[in-house]
Length: 322
Image 1: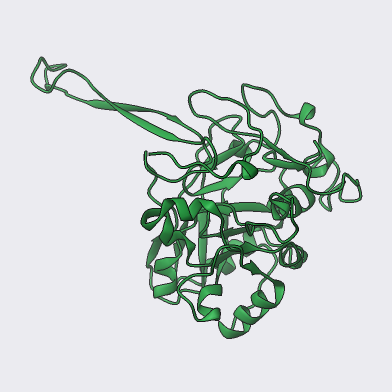
Image 2 (image 1 turned 180 degrees about the horizontal axis):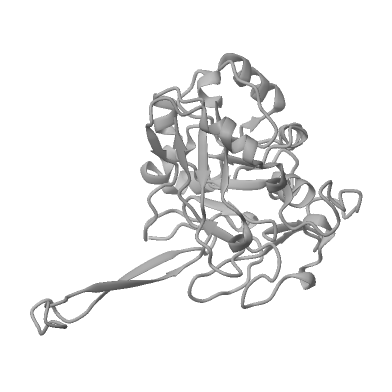
């Protein structure tokens, strides 16, 4: 079964084939050019990943006290609710019918598999070529500077180094005293500050910040509700977090932004603030329930994404270690 967003939320996408990615253009924000070149230089293609350092890895590794690991990626399959027309299909290939001849003197039998999948299904990272402002992307690049139907020539996720740093989970649902935030609930900078105070945390340069809204429960319990809208980060909070020079911001919902947007007619303005203007990566459909249950508010965050050449975004399974 596939689930489709209401028509008003469907963006133009490029029709793709096996192992699909999508480049999306949004014109919700005025096409001013005061946001580029970036602080990392006019030729930079990595954005906030520049905030990572060997020293930061060593410091984050010191957070590991118990050795417990957490898979932050959700299981992804044919019934995973996905934005718009995105989908996932996996096919197992049997070498023979399970009763026929074997290979070699050691009687080898085997199975393989292949997939037709959009790379923005399930838990994912949005690369810097994913979403822009009036045909301008990170560092002011035009789509013609990096887009090709066979894959991106710049900003592709296969070029990203491993992201190993301190992770911070902010329990916004817990802050509000509810199991989940309602559709259309914006998370403002004051909420972030209050959650930090409640959990006795600070946000540091190079951190990955993850928000718990409680929304992921609906991915399996009520997929239509899950996709129809969501609580999410406000533009003002995104700008506040960007000033902290974080590497990535993620959430347990499918799009990080609050939907419906705070300003009528806008689509994914937080993506524009983070990806285009600040080079900060967006993580979606992060599994947060186990971290919340253990009150694992800070941890070593580790992500080494598949290196599919030219990909706009990528299905991932980040790991938290504490």
